[in-house]
Length: 300
Image (cartoon, rainbow, N blue to C red):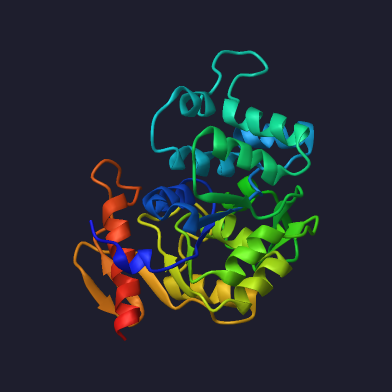
């Protein structure tokens, strides 16, 4: 596989949450230390949500997911990190990786230090940075003015919100701001638009750093209709939401799935579905498509 067009970038940053961002990071893991993932930390469901209620911590689940997908070589360490407790005890449903990150966070000065310790433990070169090191929740504002609190509730809304915010207002991780400001290439998505892609963009300092960046910005569209209130958003609406929040137009290209390969304006269509799961991007196809879209930019 030839990814020379991607290897020419010294600093590549991918932004999002959980499964989608983890897939992109694992796809581009050949970039090693040149690749950085900026991870949303607003999840309040499952094991992560329980820990947040009890410990007032950031959401560890999406960070754990990204680290797990970057641990390309199976090991006792990676298996432990993804172990989920069964049964009916207080530990039931908890993921050991979440507990490890929480424990390390309480031993370290910063949550980012906890992430870096796990990176070393799993031999991961790619940097993984939480969008903020302070706990916050995603809040949706409805047309009537009502607020919907928490990621899981936002995803369950029957109609899309008029706006989003973070409560409480928190500060973006300085390393995340530096990463996007200095990036050559920035990738948004795939993933739940309102609850994975948007949260980092709601941080004023991070949004300002991204707006200042000279990086080429690519949005990766989802393969399937997402089960959320933004399910009916067109690509244009998603792009408009991003630009409205940032206050500047930054998205240069869009990568979308199609059974046939072709280009329409700034949208590149490629067959991207994994043979093993229709909801996952095929890593090889995704890497080749990204290489193609940036190569086309260089040519033009």
